[in-house]
Structure formats: C-alpha cells, structure tokens
Image (cartoon, rainbow over the protein chains, first blue to last red):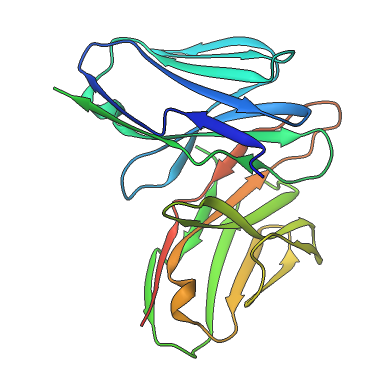
Length: 109
Length: 115
C-alpha cells in the first residue's frame, strides 16, 4: 500500500520548458514536503506546505488539502534542475514520514 | 543549511563484520531517523528516535540496531553486515514545536557496500 503516489516516474524536458510533478496522498496530513536529490547527492528540502502555495525562485509548490493533492512546478527549466524530486507527507498521527518513490527529471540543453 | 552530518560518507565492508554509521546534528531537534534508499523502493524507514534513549522500529529494522545516548547523535549499527544491506543510508532530523509543523532536514547520505 502506497500512502503517497507521484507522477510521472520519469520526465524528460527541453531547457526552458514548464514542468509539473504531481503528488497524491491517501492519509490525513499535517504537512507535505518536496525534496530534491541530485545524482549521487544528498537530499535537500525544497518546500514544506500545509496549505496554499509557496514560491522560491523558479520553483512553485501548491497543495489542495481537500483533494489530497500537491504539485511542484518548475518554470523556465534548466539542466541543473535535473534531479529526483520526492514528495513526502507528515501524517496527522505518528512521527514518521511517508515518501513517494520519486520523479526523475532530466532537462536537456 | 541545517546542521546535520553523517559519517562515514562511504564505506566498504566484508560480510559478517559489524558496522556503525553516525548521524550528528547541531539543531537540538527531537526526532532523528535512519532510512535506506534502494532503487525501486525509495526511502524506507529503518529506525527512528523521539528522544534520548527513546527509539522505535521502522519497516525494515531487521538486522539493524540504533542508539541515542545524547540529543545530537543517533547511531545505526549493522551487527553482522550482509550483502542485502548494501545501500545508501540517510539520516533525517525534525524538530518538535508545539502547534507548528517543522521541516525535515536530511544528511548527505552514507554509501555502504558489503562485499
């Protein structure tokens, strides 16, 4: 049973394209996290959301609590955005996280 | 950047030997986690801690033990390493502010190879 589902699993885009990665979850949550992992690298927290929308540079994250859905958008994509993007949720009960399996993004120059 | 460091970053060990990985934080966060990351499985929880000397098992805890004798350090021990424990191990920390969500921070990972 996967509490968190991401789509697509793999994504290839041309530089400059607008990118959307989706995350759906099945449990009640207190927060949703978007994480980024470059090949062979560590995991970096991009956003933590409990409602609405957040923006950081070219990255935008939105969440719809009623629909249990979040999206991560990248505007004007660049090859350095190539990474795995992971959606994780903090459920209302318990101290653990549930993770999606990640979306592997490749941006071609 | 949050103060979380893992050591060692890379290790090659032989089957049957004990191995200890260390996670060190300077944030005074309450929760600390150990995950393993494998292709096709994503991040899976091994053990976590919710305070000094307070730990609990995750979904893939067999073959692993942990200890947290002080807030800043969370140790993961493979008592007798097996090839199936070849993986990338991540430590994570999370704070505990009443009435507020707290962000999670991850270490850089430890790449462990058991030969």
